[in-house]
Image (cartoon, rainbow, N blue to C red; front, top):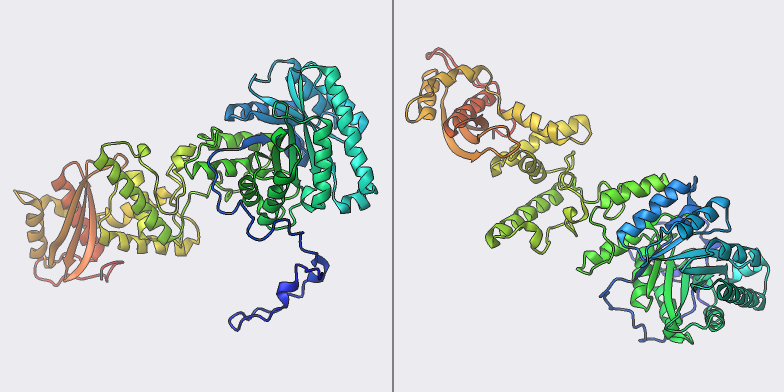
Amino acid sequence: MTTKTSADHRLRPQPWWNPQQPSGMPVHRYRRAEPQELLAPGTRTWLGRSPDRAPLWSSVDLRDGNQALADPMDLRRKRKMFDLLVRLGFKDIEIGYPAASETEFEFVRRLVTGGHIPDDVTVSVFTPARPELIERTFEAIRGTDRAVVHLCHATACLWREVVFRKTPSEVMALARDSARQMVRLADRAGGDIRFEYSPETFNVTEPEFALEIANTVAEIVDATPDRPLILNLPSTVEMHAPHVFADQIQWMSANLDRRDGIILSVHPHNDRGTAVAAAEFALAAGADRVEGTLFGNGERTGNVCLVTLALNLFSRGIDPQLDLSDLPAVRRAVEECNQMPVPDRHPYAGDLVFTAFSGTHQDAIAKGMVHLADRADAAGVPVAELPWDVPYLPVDPQDLGRSYEAVIRVNSQSGKGGIAHVLRTRWGIELPEGLRAEFGRVIQRVTDLSGREVEPGRIRDVFRTEYCDTGDWAGFAAFASGDDPVESLLAEVRACGVDARVEQTVCDEGGPGSGTEYVCYTRLLVAHEPVWGVGLGATAHAAMVQAVLSGLRRSGARAGNGRSVPQLAGAREGAR
C-alpha cells in the first residue's frame, strides 16, 4: 500500500486565479506520513454532535501551568490560585508536582494538613514513572481523605527511541511496574486514593500501543464504575488537525476494555492554535473530562483555555458549571499569579474582544443595542431578561462583569454610528441622522490628523466646540423674545442682512451625562446653505436659541449694519 504524505495534495496544479509562488521555505523537512485512519468511512459518530452539558473541568494551572512560568509561583501565589479555582467552582484541581521541588511539596502538605480542601473538591498530584518520585508523591498526600495520584510518561516512538531509548515492551513494563507501585502505596496510605494515567504524547503514539498500555494500567488498578481510573489522553505537542484527535478519542472510547470504569479525559495543547476546537471535537467523540488552564497558560503555546471552552458553552445557552460572571476579577488574579498578561484579543477576557473600531460593525452594534432596549421597553422587562441577540457580540459583556463603555471606540476606521453611540450612551446626546454623518466627518478629520484613537471625552469636547459655541453671535440672544423667541431672533438677524431660516429642529431632554436640561439640534439655511447648530439650555426655548446662534456662527456669516451684504467665511463641514 502506498503511504501518503502531508505534501501530496500540494502537487496538484493551482487554479488560474491563484498566482501564489513557492515560498522557498524548507517544507521538505516536514513531510510526514499522514496519521493512521482509525475509523471506517461513515462511522465518524462525533460529527454533528452538539454539547448538551459541561464536562468535568480539571484545572492544571498549579502544575502544568506553573511549570511553564519563567518565575514559578511561590506559596502565596499558589494559594491565591487555588482559592480562585475553588471560588470559580472547580471540583477537580491538580495542585502540584510534589517531587519536583521543596516549594511544590510544602504547598501540597499545607493544603492537606491545613484543612483547606473543600469536601466536594478532589485534588490530584502529578508524578513521573520513577519509583523514588512516586514514593515522594505519596509522602506529600499522607493523611488526606481523598486524592488522585496522576502517573505520566511518554509513549510515542520518537520519545521511546530518542529520549528514553526503550523498546515498546520496556515502556509497557515501566507503566506496569509504576501502576503496581501506586496500588501498593495507596493500599498502605488508606483513604480514598484514586488514579490517573496519562500516556504522554498519546496523539503521536501508535494507536494499538496506546490502547494496549491503557488497558494494562486499567486492569492493574482495577478500574470500576465505583472506583474509576482517569485515563487522560494528551495531545502533548499538537501535530494534526482537530478532527484527527477526535477520531483518536472516538476509537479509544470504543475499544477500551473497561470503558465503564474509565473517566476519559483529554489534555490538548495549542501548538497549532486549535486546542479549543480539538477539545470540543473530543468531547463530541466521547471524552468526559478536560484538563486545561485559565486563559491557556502552559508550555510553548499553552494548554487549552478552560475559560474559552466554558464560555463557548455559555454562549450556546449551556450552563458551564463555572462562575465566570466577574471575568475581569478572574483575569486580574490569574495575571498576578502567573505574572503574565492576558492578551488584548484573548476570547471573552481580552481588553478588545468586545470592542469595535470598524464603522460598519459599530453601526450594527449600536442599532442592535437600541433594538434590544426597545424590545425590553415594549415587553416591560429589564434588558437582562431578554434573549441576547446583538450583531457582532456573541454574549452580553455585562453577563461576564464587563461594561459597555469599551464596546465602541473611535479611530480613523470608525463611522457615524459608532461616534453617535458614544455620545448617546455616555452623555445622552442623541444626534439626528443628518448630524450624525456630518459629525462623523468632523471626527474623521481629527483621527486623520492624529493617527490615533479618540477617547470619548475628546469626542464630547470636539462636539461642544464645533456645535455649541455661539461665538460673536452670542449677543443676539437678547433679541430672542416674545411667544416665538426663535422667530424674533431670526427677524433681527435678517434685518442685519443675513438670510437665515430654520429648516429642522429636534429638541430632547438632556441625558444624565449631558449636564443640561434640554439639548436642541437645529438645521438652518443660511444664504440657502444648510448648517447645523446645537444648543444646551435650562428650557427648550433657551436651547433652541443657542442652537440657532451656534448655527449662525458655524455658517461663517457676519452681521452687517442692515445695509451691507453679509459675508460668508466659506462652507463649513457638512454645509452642503
